[in-house]
Length: 57
Image (tube, rainbow, N blue to C red; front, side):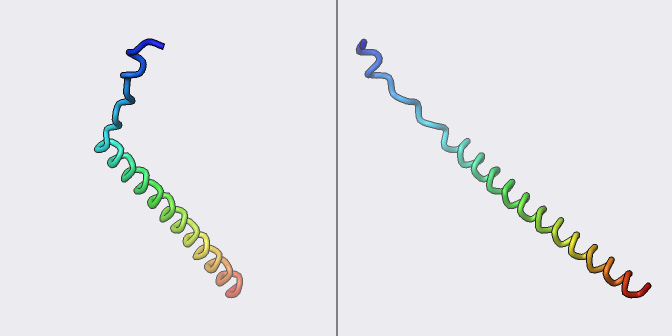
């Protein structure tokens, strides 16, 4: 082992970048969840509409 190897330290991560990225990821997750929920709600509404239509016929 040479002495240079010991001196070498891991560079610190760029925190600002990480914070931004984290925020982005969180937003993405939230967006996906709300999207899923919206789709589910849509499906529910469609189902109810279909049921109502069959009732009328």
